[in-house]
Length: 132
Image (cartoon, rainbow, N blue to C red; front, side, top):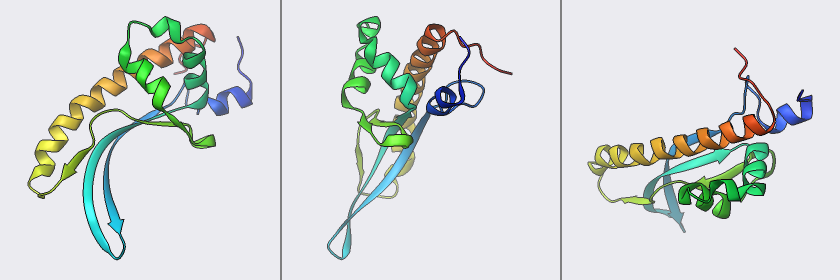
């Protein structure tokens, strides 16, 4: 199947489907002060991959993590589907950041594996070969 420009755009095409996994640091501001800080893993999935996987969720019945991503992701238009992919860890001491990063890196790796599986499914369904 030859993909047109619109289809490539919705896959965030970069020679293949493109998505992201980020470790984020968030500071919550309450009134006029910093209230709390958190770190978490966030997956950002391109719209086409997400829609195809959601329409074919039965193919992922053996993968609770993907099913949860499909259920809880928040659609943000051209920016894709955002979903937290691990714990939301409150940082109460700056010394906690290094240990928290180690824990979140494990969750980041797991989220990457799930998105790779989703991309692979999408590529097979659309008969896409990776461009070099």
